Image (cartoon, one colour):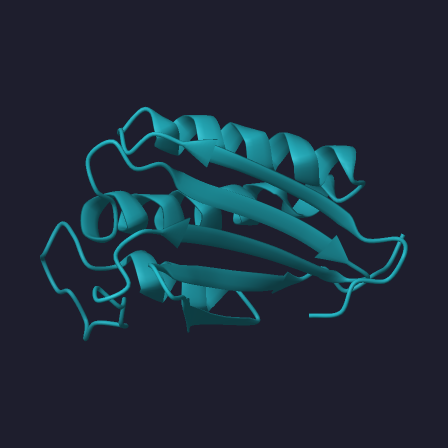
Length: 136
């Protein structure tokens, strides 16, 4: 993703604790609204919740922070979560039926224009991009 001069960027780290999910979600909601795209704040918050929850459940280690990056470039909002467990790649699961869990990436796929996993030397980054459609 290229970075034109009008790009917006934010990064924060969080402890691997459940309370980090609503904190991260509120941060992204505020950023998206502050950056002039209030109508996409709910979708961005839901994508954030799913990516952060997946990191907590499958990618975090005790006492190792995870990172949340939010980047607005033109009409694309990228939400990226980096965790220390690169060997635990997320994948889209078949219909979860009556299961309580397993729908996170299906929700991300439904809301995002695209999503993927980037392998790192240590850990991985799972990102999703929302197409905001209009540039401010």
